[in-house]
Image 1 (spheres, rainbow, N blue to C red):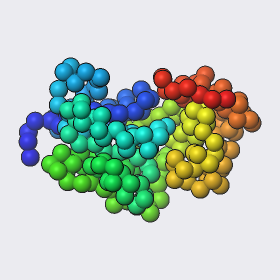
Image 2 (tube, rainbow, N blue to C red):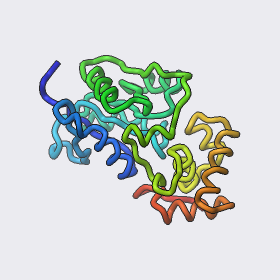
Image 3 (spheres, rainbow, N blue to C red):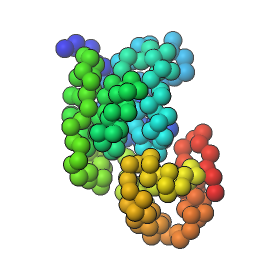
Image 4 (cartoon, rainbow, N blue to C red):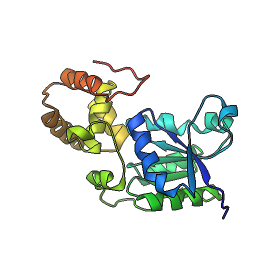
Length: 219
Protein backbone atom coordinates (compact mmCIF):
# COMPACT_ATOMS: atom_id res chain seq x y z
CA UNK A 1 0.00 0.00 0.00
CA UNK A 2 1.22 3.53 -0.83
CA UNK A 3 2.84 5.52 1.95
CA UNK A 4 1.26 8.70 0.56
CA UNK A 5 -1.86 9.68 2.54
CA UNK A 6 -5.16 9.30 0.75
CA UNK A 7 -6.75 12.57 -0.30
CA UNK A 8 -10.33 12.59 0.99
CA UNK A 9 -12.99 15.21 0.21
CA UNK A 10 -15.99 15.47 2.55
CA UNK A 11 -19.39 16.19 1.00
CA UNK A 12 -22.26 17.52 3.14
CA UNK A 13 -24.12 20.82 3.31
CA UNK A 14 -23.76 21.09 7.10
CA UNK A 15 -20.44 22.50 8.30
CA UNK A 16 -20.77 20.81 11.70
CA UNK A 17 -21.11 17.38 10.04
CA UNK A 18 -18.00 17.96 7.94
CA UNK A 19 -16.09 19.26 10.98
CA UNK A 20 -17.04 16.14 12.97
CA UNK A 21 -15.71 13.77 10.30
CA UNK A 22 -12.58 15.88 9.88
CA UNK A 23 -11.97 15.61 13.63
CA UNK A 24 -12.53 11.84 13.52
CA UNK A 25 -9.89 11.45 10.82
CA UNK A 26 -7.36 13.89 12.31
CA UNK A 27 -5.45 11.24 14.34
CA UNK A 28 -4.81 9.32 11.10
CA UNK A 29 -3.11 12.15 9.20
CA UNK A 30 -0.34 9.82 8.08
CA UNK A 31 -2.96 7.73 6.24
CA UNK A 32 -5.61 10.24 5.12
CA UNK A 33 -5.59 13.94 4.29
CA UNK A 34 -8.87 15.84 4.17
CA UNK A 35 -9.02 18.38 1.36
CA UNK A 36 -11.61 21.07 0.71
CA UNK A 37 -13.87 20.36 -2.24
CA UNK A 38 -13.85 23.38 -4.53
CA UNK A 39 -15.64 24.20 -7.77
CA UNK A 40 -12.30 24.67 -9.54
CA UNK A 41 -10.37 21.38 -9.67
CA UNK A 42 -7.17 23.27 -10.49
CA UNK A 43 -7.10 24.56 -6.91
CA UNK A 44 -7.33 21.16 -5.22
CA UNK A 45 -5.76 18.57 -7.52
CA UNK A 46 -6.75 14.89 -7.74
CA UNK A 47 -8.93 13.44 -4.95
CA UNK A 48 -8.84 9.74 -4.13
CA UNK A 49 -12.28 9.49 -2.50
CA UNK A 50 -15.27 11.77 -2.00
CA UNK A 51 -17.00 10.72 1.23
CA UNK A 52 -20.62 11.87 1.07
CA UNK A 53 -22.36 12.06 4.44
CA UNK A 54 -26.11 11.52 4.04
CA UNK A 55 -27.21 13.47 7.15
CA UNK A 56 -30.00 15.87 6.20
CA UNK A 57 -29.42 15.15 2.52
CA UNK A 58 -31.48 13.73 -0.33
CA UNK A 59 -29.84 10.35 -0.83
CA UNK A 60 -31.06 10.21 -4.43
CA UNK A 61 -29.23 13.49 -5.12
CA UNK A 62 -26.07 12.20 -3.48
CA UNK A 63 -26.06 9.12 -5.68
CA UNK A 64 -26.16 11.33 -8.76
CA UNK A 65 -22.96 13.11 -7.68
CA UNK A 66 -20.80 10.49 -9.38
CA UNK A 67 -20.55 12.24 -12.75
CA UNK A 68 -19.90 15.82 -11.53
CA UNK A 69 -17.38 14.57 -8.97
CA UNK A 70 -15.51 12.68 -11.69
CA UNK A 71 -15.20 15.97 -13.58
CA UNK A 72 -13.52 17.36 -10.46
CA UNK A 73 -10.79 14.69 -10.60
CA UNK A 74 -12.41 12.51 -7.93
CA UNK A 75 -11.53 8.84 -8.33
CA UNK A 76 -13.94 7.05 -5.97
CA UNK A 77 -17.26 8.02 -4.34
CA UNK A 78 -18.65 6.57 -1.12
CA UNK A 79 -21.78 7.23 0.92
CA UNK A 80 -21.38 7.56 4.71
CA UNK A 81 -24.76 6.68 6.16
CA UNK A 82 -26.93 5.05 8.82
CA UNK A 83 -29.15 3.73 6.01
CA UNK A 84 -26.96 0.74 5.18
CA UNK A 85 -29.71 -1.61 4.00
CA UNK A 86 -29.46 -4.08 1.12
CA UNK A 87 -31.85 -1.91 -0.92
CA UNK A 88 -29.71 1.20 -0.46
CA UNK A 89 -26.57 -0.76 -1.29
CA UNK A 90 -28.07 -2.16 -4.49
CA UNK A 91 -29.26 1.28 -5.63
CA UNK A 92 -25.94 2.91 -4.79
CA UNK A 93 -23.92 0.33 -6.73
CA UNK A 94 -26.28 0.64 -9.69
CA UNK A 95 -25.62 4.39 -9.71
CA UNK A 96 -21.85 3.93 -9.78
CA UNK A 97 -21.12 4.57 -6.10
CA UNK A 98 -17.99 2.66 -5.07
CA UNK A 99 -18.75 2.16 -1.38
CA UNK A 100 -21.44 2.29 1.27
CA UNK A 101 -19.80 2.99 4.63
CA UNK A 102 -21.72 2.75 7.87
CA UNK A 103 -21.65 5.39 10.60
CA UNK A 104 -21.37 2.52 13.05
CA UNK A 105 -17.67 2.39 12.08
CA UNK A 106 -15.17 3.90 14.47
CA UNK A 107 -12.41 6.14 13.09
CA UNK A 108 -9.84 3.39 12.54
CA UNK A 109 -12.37 1.15 10.83
CA UNK A 110 -13.44 4.05 8.61
CA UNK A 111 -9.83 4.67 7.53
CA UNK A 112 -9.36 0.94 6.86
CA UNK A 113 -12.45 0.93 4.63
CA UNK A 114 -11.30 4.06 2.79
CA UNK A 115 -7.96 2.41 2.06
CA UNK A 116 -9.73 -0.66 0.69
CA UNK A 117 -11.84 1.59 -1.55
CA UNK A 118 -8.75 3.38 -2.81
CA UNK A 119 -7.19 0.17 -4.14
CA UNK A 120 -10.29 -0.70 -6.13
CA UNK A 121 -12.52 -2.76 -3.82
CA UNK A 122 -16.28 -2.22 -3.82
CA UNK A 123 -16.74 -1.79 -0.08
CA UNK A 124 -20.22 -2.36 1.32
CA UNK A 125 -20.43 -2.52 5.10
CA UNK A 126 -21.74 -5.88 6.26
CA UNK A 127 -23.75 -4.46 9.17
CA UNK A 128 -27.13 -4.89 7.51
CA UNK A 129 -29.96 -5.82 9.89
CA UNK A 130 -27.88 -5.02 12.98
CA UNK A 131 -29.43 -2.61 15.51
CA UNK A 132 -28.07 0.90 15.08
CA UNK A 133 -27.12 2.80 18.24
CA UNK A 134 -27.52 6.36 17.03
CA UNK A 135 -26.60 7.77 20.43
CA UNK A 136 -23.19 6.10 20.13
CA UNK A 137 -22.38 8.47 17.28
CA UNK A 138 -20.98 11.06 19.64
CA UNK A 139 -18.71 8.49 21.23
CA UNK A 140 -17.28 7.67 17.79
CA UNK A 141 -16.53 11.33 17.16
CA UNK A 142 -19.56 12.31 15.06
CA UNK A 143 -21.19 15.69 15.56
CA UNK A 144 -24.47 17.05 14.26
CA UNK A 145 -26.75 20.09 14.38
CA UNK A 146 -28.90 20.02 17.51
CA UNK A 147 -26.60 17.81 19.56
CA UNK A 148 -26.04 20.59 22.10
CA UNK A 149 -29.81 20.74 22.60
CA UNK A 150 -29.81 17.05 23.65
CA UNK A 151 -31.23 15.84 20.34
CA UNK A 152 -29.99 12.45 19.20
CA UNK A 153 -28.67 12.32 15.64
CA UNK A 154 -31.91 10.77 14.42
CA UNK A 155 -34.11 13.31 16.26
CA UNK A 156 -31.97 16.15 14.90
CA UNK A 157 -32.28 14.79 11.38
CA UNK A 158 -36.08 14.79 11.75
CA UNK A 159 -36.03 18.50 12.60
CA UNK A 160 -33.56 19.23 9.78
CA UNK A 161 -35.77 17.48 7.23
CA UNK A 162 -38.96 19.08 8.57
CA UNK A 163 -37.30 22.49 8.33
CA UNK A 164 -36.46 21.70 4.69
CA UNK A 165 -40.18 21.19 4.05
CA UNK A 166 -40.38 17.38 3.86
CA UNK A 167 -43.58 15.59 4.88
CA UNK A 168 -43.54 12.64 7.29
CA UNK A 169 -43.99 10.28 4.35
CA UNK A 170 -41.07 11.84 2.49
CA UNK A 171 -38.91 11.64 5.62
CA UNK A 172 -39.79 7.95 5.98
CA UNK A 173 -38.69 7.31 2.40
CA UNK A 174 -35.50 9.32 2.85
CA UNK A 175 -34.45 7.67 6.12
CA UNK A 176 -35.75 4.15 5.34
CA UNK A 177 -37.79 4.27 8.55
CA UNK A 178 -41.41 3.26 8.99
CA UNK A 179 -43.94 6.13 9.21
CA UNK A 180 -44.64 5.16 12.82
CA UNK A 181 -40.93 5.36 13.69
CA UNK A 182 -40.72 8.78 12.05
CA UNK A 183 -43.68 9.98 14.14
CA UNK A 184 -42.07 8.62 17.29
CA UNK A 185 -38.74 10.40 16.63
CA UNK A 186 -40.57 13.62 15.79
CA UNK A 187 -42.65 13.51 18.98
CA UNK A 188 -39.50 12.96 21.02
CA UNK A 189 -37.71 15.81 19.26
CA UNK A 190 -40.67 18.14 19.75
CA UNK A 191 -40.67 17.48 23.49
CA UNK A 192 -36.97 18.29 23.73
CA UNK A 193 -37.18 21.57 21.82
CA UNK A 194 -40.49 22.62 23.38
CA UNK A 195 -42.75 22.80 20.32
CA UNK A 196 -46.08 21.21 19.48
CA UNK A 197 -46.73 22.20 15.86
CA UNK A 198 -44.85 21.64 12.60
CA UNK A 199 -44.67 25.36 11.85
CA UNK A 200 -43.00 25.87 15.23
CA UNK A 201 -40.52 23.09 14.47
CA UNK A 202 -39.67 24.73 11.13
CA UNK A 203 -39.08 28.08 12.84
CA UNK A 204 -37.00 26.44 15.58
CA UNK A 205 -34.94 24.57 13.00
CA UNK A 206 -34.19 27.74 11.03
CA UNK A 207 -33.34 29.72 14.19
CA UNK A 208 -31.02 27.00 15.51
CA UNK A 209 -29.01 26.24 12.39
CA UNK A 210 -30.77 23.01 11.42
CA UNK A 211 -31.06 24.12 7.78
CA UNK A 212 -27.77 24.35 5.94
CA UNK A 213 -26.70 27.31 3.89
CA UNK A 214 -28.25 27.27 0.45
CA UNK A 215 -31.23 25.15 1.47
CA UNK A 216 -34.61 26.82 1.61
CA UNK A 217 -37.06 25.80 4.31
CA UNK A 218 -40.78 25.62 3.68
CA UNK A 219 -43.31 26.38 6.38
